[in-house]
Amino acid sequence: MSETMKCLVKSQAEKGLWMEQREIPKIGPDDVLIRVKKTGLCGTDAHIWNWDDWSQRTVPVGLVTGHEFAGEIVELGQNVHDLEIGQRCSGEGHLIGHLSRQVRAGRFHLDPETRGIGVNVDGAFAEYLKLPAFNVVPLPDTIPDEIGAILDPLGNAVHTALSFDLVGEDVLITGAGPIGVMAAAVAKHVGARHVVITDVNQTRLDLAAQVTDVVTVNVTTTDLLEVTSGLGMKQGFDVGLEMSGNQVAFDQMVEAMVMGGQVAMLGIPPGKSQVDWSRIVFKALTIKGVYGREIFETWYKMIAMLEDGLDVSRIITHHFPANNFEQGFAAMLSGDSGKVVLDWAVGSEEREINISAR
Ligand code: NAD
Ligand code: ZN
View (cartoon, rainbow, N blue to C red):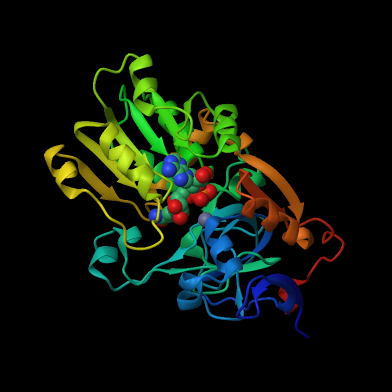
């Protein structure tokens, strides 16, 4: 007899997601089965919800969505000897191959064959998730499940922020979405001097100020250069972290950088955009594209920082039971939320599934 689980599926090629019952995934010899406890809603999930051009090209109809999660291991594949049943964990949602030059050189995050859970293969918005044991990241007791569920986007923030040396530097972050705000907290934690974050949404800037010690600038009402001169900055920003995906924000960043400054770009512009390359050349800027997290160095560093006082907990503004996912998506799509967390354990404790009897 096969046991079933509830999961949030892209069942139809139209806007929305649908809660369904599916068979609990069968794991292979190198996998683990994770009982999912909490998951984070991500901008990627909003694209999939909206069924925009990118998701129509990328996401197969019938996919179990979701990639930000924390849970507990309930079953081990026969080759898995270094993890235990009951281990609390999160995990890297990018599944990599073994054959590319990059992977064979140990640069796992640069594998061109990467597939994403909840994007290309079944994901974590489910009571149970199948994951290669290699991708599991054990959680120390000091990190609660709800923070475990947002380590994926915190990892984006950490990977971007640690792209360049920030110690004593002045840092500009464009875009106070959840990732921009967490990047601001990381930049302060590692010793940046001034950290300035811009947005056009005052609610998000107010949230940024609650999460960390950052100078917020609403670019619709305030001149960024006035703010920097008020801070006593004589030249521009040493490091820029682009986290809005917005062309106007990027232009403003280029203008605000110091000669020879360094820019890490995480934000994804919606399509091709006009860039004033001559300005970038004459300013001798370095620009680095950032994708995902370094596997597993980013995970190591962020857990170390969380254990050493980095606090991003206030970025979580909404909690909902998984059954109320529509409210969760409405909160995220409003643009005024921080991270939205869905709880998959609520109401399911009484249904203890006997994995070994499957
Ligand atoms: P988000 O959409 O929640 O936040 C973007 C913020 O930028 C919003 O608050 C928006 O108001 C703000 N913004 C819009 N116009 C602006 C302007 N002119 N100046 C300043 N801010 C402006 O996104 P998020 O979830 O925090 O993610 C940040 C970005 O990173 C997004 O573009 C996302 O697609 C991208 N992303 C990239 C990767 C990767 O691997 N490269 C991974 C995750 C997310
Ligand atoms: Zn995400």
